[in-house]
Amino acid sequence: MSFKDDTLTLTDKVSILRLVSIFSEVPAEVLADIAMVSTQHSLPAESIIINKGDMDFALYVVIHGKVKVHAGDHIFTTFSNNDYFGEYALIDSSPRSATVTTLEPTEVLRLDQTHFNQIIASNKKITQGILNGLIMRLRDYNVLQSELTKKGEEIKLQRDVLEKQRKELEVLNATKDKFFAIIAHDLRNPFSTVLGLSELLAREFENFDSDRLKEFINQIYKYSNNTFNLLENLLQWSMVQTGRMPLRPKVVDLFEVVMENIELLRGNATNKEISLIGPEEGEWFSYVDVNMITTVVRNLISNAIKFTEVGGFVKVKFEQDDRFVTVSVSDSGVGISAIDLSKLFKLDSNPTTIGTSQEKGTGLGLILCKEFVERNGGKVWVESILGEGTTFRFTAPRISSH
Image 1: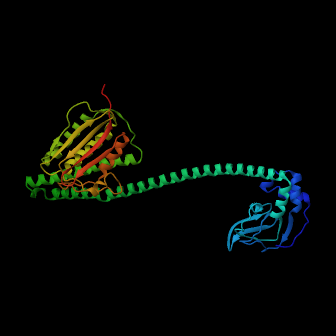
Image 2 (image 1 turned 60 degrees about the vertical axis):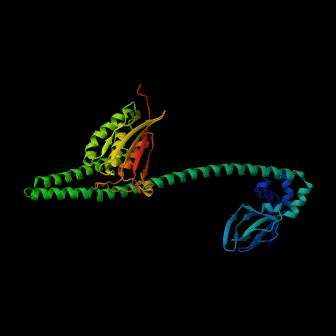
């Protein structure tokens, strides 16, 4: 570096050095001594002030102009009017870690480490002032660190919100895909069957005997009933997804809920010669939304009948402790494989299986069961061995009838 130019007055140099944080608390008369040994330099553009690896131990303050701190073509930062760099070189003798080059004609004020050390050795006030400046800088750093920590926490919260929204969008997309799959396949197929049978009956009614007519009518009833149950589940599911099904809990006799559903589904069980066994009568009271829990019980019993062979059994049982009533729906049916067990209650991977009498379903009923049970403060789970039957259990908050 060259082009030394001492056009600055001592007062000018003091003012410039005051911009350096470590000198902010140094008394003016002492800072004047430091200013006296500092030197002014005028440099053209593209002048190298410091080379990476240089043993250049000095502080620089940019009076006018602009410099870049870089390693090759990579620029770390730039400094312009009243910025400074290299203050640590006044007390550190490590090689320079980057190159500093002027970007335009630039004037700098340079304070050499050797001159600085000579002044410090003869004036304790400088040391005290520098320490005060360092303390003030440390305080500023702590404030900055606190602000950065706060900003970091805000960013984390925003990231958590975005992640939550991303997961919600994934669920919504899965919901949309499931919805369209149901509309496109599981509703279309039974309607097509019912329409086909109805058309055949209307066109060829006189050509069928009573047994054949009864078979067609039973088929129409079965498909219509299955489609109605699917539509009912689909309606409730859509209401849950859109927040149009508020929770309305009250004291409910679970025994009555179960027995009503057993009677409702007894015809399905009788058609397959399945024994439908209700729970023991007793005080099985819970504080739940009766419509939601009715849907849960109906779906679990209906599924048990669907996947039980002719001549099997479906049994509902109650247990309770101080906090919960546990409702169990067990069957002697086909069971569930370990792979399919892990997929149950999940919208994006919920398996669908054909019943023992070719009954079809979407698996949507179990999704509803989980949603409704958890909204009422309980949990639902399943235990099964392939070929040996299945037991679904769910809990509901217990309450005394008195």
